[in-house]
Image (cartoon, rainbow, N blue to C red; front, top):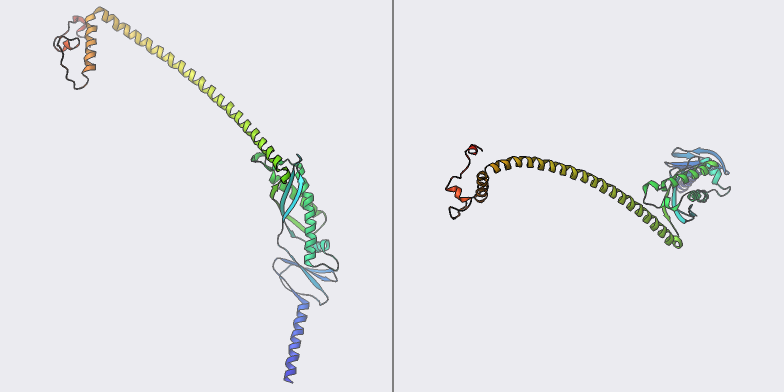
Length: 309
């Protein structure tokens, strides 16, 4: 009897676990769940925790966090007819699980992987449509070192608005959060032409910069020469004025020297002595040598000039 009781209890526990498994499910943090009855939506569960359902009901859970569709590559042409290959990503999330399920769920086969595959296919199609915005830009707007003409960020915003309009137009229950271009390239068949064009553009910029630099250099040089001419003219005028003043003062001394040649001779000898004996010097000369005779004899000077200093 005891053995049968243990078997019965064990069986009841197993049945209870199976029944509990059939009538409960767990909603985790950041998940959104739908309770279904024969593919018909009964209710939505947004709060985390243990949830109850009837045995004939089912449920499906969706990730409520931001999801990323990465490494999507599209090929299109720019406005200047250059073929470009764009690799981009988009961030999106489920806003309305009911609308999301109705848009991408399939009757009789509505597992999560089926629904996510359906939304992925739709997103890839939307991306291809949004990539047509590239035709409004030249390649030089997207690949350049000039910050003023760089329009890659503007292109990303235009593509994002296009995607958001497509997502909002059909009540799909999703929101496109962000879009970014990871890589922008060209096929190998046209890369050589692109590089030649880029080189030509850079050479044109260099030529323009050199012309502007030469123009500024000539302007600075002309301004400097003009200022130098003015300074030289002012200096020459000042020099002539000083020379005139010197000539006037010299004329007064010349008149004095003409009246007394002995004074002129005396002053020249003093100047010679000053230049010769400006340091400790020993010279052995005849006392009658010019200039040095002043050391022995007082020169003959007109009396009216003896008091001159």
